[in-house]
Amino acid sequence: MPDPITCLLAVLAAAGTSAIVVLVLGGPGRPASAARINAATIAGVGAGLAAGYGVLQIQPEWPPATGLERFLTIVLPAVIGVELLAVVLRLPQALTLLLRAGLAISTARILLHDSVYLRGAGDEPTWRVPLLLALGGTVLAAEWGLLLRLNRRAPGVSLPLALAASLVCGGAAIMLAGYLAGGEATLPPAAALAGAALASAGIGRSAAPGTIGIGLLALFGLLFLGRFFGAVPTGQGLTVLLAPLACWAAEHPAVKNRRPWATFFLRWGLIAVPLIVVLMLAKRNFERGLGRLMSVESATSAQSGELANVKLPVHGLVGHAWPIALGRLRQAGDENGWPSQAPVMRWFSPCITVSTRL
Amino acid sequence: MQRLFSTWVITVALGLCVWAAGRPAIAADDYAFDMVHSSISFKTRHLDISWIHGRFNEAEGTFSIDKKDPAKSTFQLSIKADSVDTANKARDEHLRQPDYFDTKQFPTIDFKSTSVKPIKDGYEVTGDFTMHGKTKKITFKMVGGKEAEFMGTKRVGFSAELSVKRSDFGFDKTQIGLIGDEALIFIDCEGMRK
Image (cartoon, rainbow over the protein chains, first blue to last red):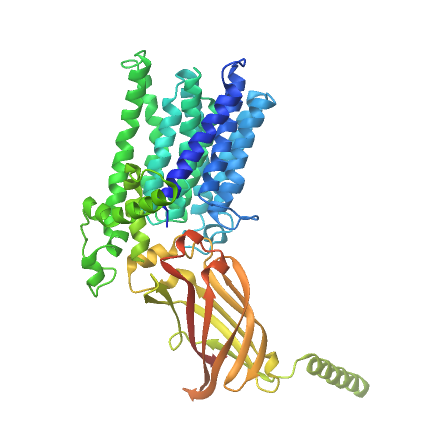
């Protein structure tokens, strides 16, 4: 069960660590070349991820046996390594593109390794798996290329922040679909990305392309796990994955060349629409499925799974979960002298109550 | 002609001797689980105040009983984790996800005996229990062994109770707490002789 205090601390640790690393490595008093800032932000996101996952106590084993372990021990280090090598060794652009394309194509295969999909023991027809791997790789590579092109064309913090928002929204959708650990795992990359982007903006530089790749791989990997190992619907997963591409709409001649803050809000407005729709759909599915576990009406009924749709209002979810979250906050406050109010806990409330009903 | 016939007879006789010597003595009875008359159920604590009961609806298993040398008996069971059934569809779907059984990654829960010892009411079985990708050696008692014949097929029944800790099998530690760490598994099997 995700502990709201631990989640909040993980977010703060990831964001804080990445921001500090960016400020230290690329801060004032140093020649702030684009390569230096890029390396600093990649190192910052890497350090932020380590800090965030450390606080969440997600300790993957080696050799990795689960999809999430493969994501944490192979996919994330690989993308950080590729981006860092490209900057530090000044790899030729063609080689960097080749490495990125290789990573994009192999990520889905790595995540599905040794699962029923590749063993041919699942419900999926055998012809669908190679198609799925090819499509997954193509979509990821195409989106990666388009986001990097957009970042070159109109650099700014809005793109990494859009990726961070998509990660948080994807995490909520994954949690509401019942995969709590998978949803929780989206918090460190989202926070690290946001921390690094804001820190680089603080020293007057735009977001580095390296962080775009890390953020996108994290988004793709976790949504892929949520879809193929959890119960995230394909439509919801694809919508969240492709939502950052909505930032391209701000490049339309009719709205282009506006002030940076106007572009920032336009981009955010454009990605907010699909993300909010996904959250509403995820909440509706939650009420129809796992939400029943929390409903008193359902719990006292002899019927089990075929019950009529139990409408669970938001205040019902929050009302049930809020005391638990507040209890934890107060307990932590008593122990550590922290303030015991945090509106961010509202996000985790439905997920907390799922497990209490199990 | 007669010489050729003698050679042929000797060759066939020798061949039969070699075949008979190479073939193991038939002392063990091999059985397959009859899942219509077998069940694999479990229970685990909820909030440390009550028990949640569930079962696995699909499994396959075999066992071999050697009455002359019980140590040569073997037991094998493979449970389809996807078939978990706790009489609540939403909860079952959640149990299949990576927070619990992770059935897309670990589709089966397996047991394979490594040693069998005869005891008063049946057998003490030790073997490798694999769940959630982790294998641990466990020992439990298979009680029973009564035989019956039905529709011309010999049947034998056993019951076993075993206790496992989810934390020993790599389950997500954050998912342990509200639901008890320990799970009691009850196996009641009826085997049909092959």
